[in-house]
Length: 376
Image 1 (cartoon, rainbow, N blue to C red):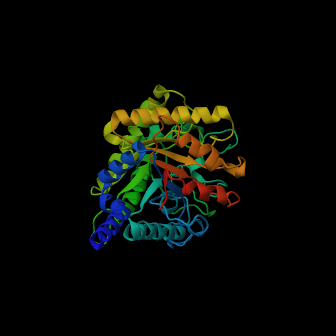
Image 2 (image 1 turned 90 degrees about the vertical axis):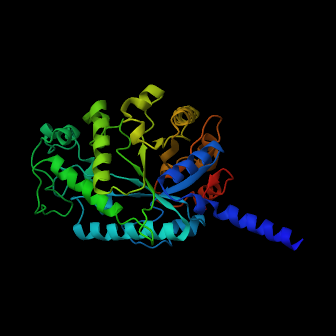
């Protein structure tokens, strides 16, 4: 009888740490995400659950309110690299980011899901908004019209002097001859961070890297209005290859992610760079609960992603969603989770974007504790 109790307890212990045992490198993470999706489960991820802009501390407001620490969490290279932000703040964010990734891995084998809101290389000093939104637009009269196609300039190594502007009000001392020169250094900068994301034995910590997301929109300089489909693919591949050049040992799952403004498989695959460059496919959607029409549209997109992923052996994700301004009552439980549980929907990750406050924290806390959501 005692032996039986012992083995039952041992079995429960093994079950509780199976994640840590199986999740060792990029390939095993991908396998685990596919397995979760196929079994009808989604890993909960929260953008800025840990905020490297402020600290490297793992005791965050999200942990206090939601009473969980997710296996996957969202962060961004934007604040830890680039020429737009204050150099000291960039350095602080960089150090915090490295500490967070290493500590969460050491503590419970949690991994980061990175975005990269890279600023526009032509952004001027003192620009009042985030640098990555500096694009050719009627509301931004000082934008150099001849430089609206930056991706093309990077690919062709054309363009003019850039990297001059920043948020401080004083131009940077160092300038770059072309956006390609500037971009190469940004990739190296990110790669240098990646090279420090290692465990206590120096083994690379795996993570997800979602490149150039929401490409069918036009509010960022890699958006559809500013780059052709073929140039987007080339740019995606160039970015991936350049980072691999400077961080050859990295364990990265590369993510492909439009926003929600597409409805067919052909539209989704329009800028897909190729199977050898992608590990995770998904989309962003902030309108799931706004109407039944929006809900059905989200289900349709999730079904398409799930179908493609099954054919290509890809992991899947809803990379961004949240209840904007708390417009929708019970957004997470009545709408988001209903979409995740819909027939033929298999999304291995659901990432909630940053919250302005916790007015709907009870709904979100209920959501992260659902049986189909892996949150601890």
